[in-house]
Image (cartoon, rainbow, N blue to C red; front, side, top):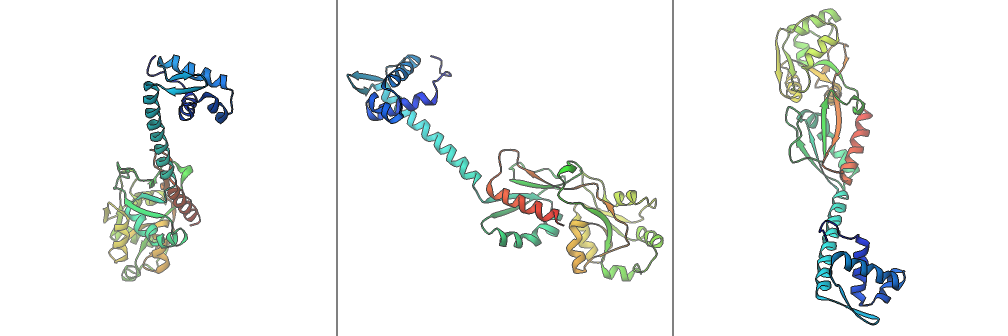
Length: 299
């Protein structure tokens, strides 16, 4: 017989019961079938394998050496299968979840709200990992990844807008509070601007200027690899940053940043939640995913 052509698991189950009780009759009662059906199954198994598994002694049977060896191997194989299934079920029921996220989103939105999540779901153990600037998930594969992308707009978790922000100190220093819209824009592009740039999306200042129909070019624009850097520098009064709704909502609420003017344009990119493609996510990841999606969509 070809080793690749083993009989079905059902036949091996019949063999296991017969070997355990040393009787085809008892095995038939246990399995709820006729004794002749059991005999046929065992005969078919022996013919298929080319091995005598039982010695017949009237109504009683006993395992041959080959039968005993097969029973031991079968028990080990089934135990390994059960253990593999147990481990996979344990993974699915796990409440440990890892999530990869950009530093800006982590510091500006996620971390300030973790206490609320943990209060609501104290059973979940959450591990936050940092995404590199290009947004490529790490090779070790977190359960969930929060990406900022132009792609998959049908999966966007919220609607983000772009608009300039600065600290009250900077606004007062440069007399920006009461300027007419035309003069304000003219003044903005002449002052130190703080931007960010990623390899997967365009510079946010360029997006805002194009989206607003403004043809003026910034005179002094410094770009940083993370949005959190430009926003922090703006809070320190070192220039005007391009705010995004999700990232600056807390700063606007606290007054550390103020919106300049009323020109807002839809951000060309947004946040999506991506599951690890290596397999189904566990219970903890599902809880966090539902919480995050619900919380962001209500923003």
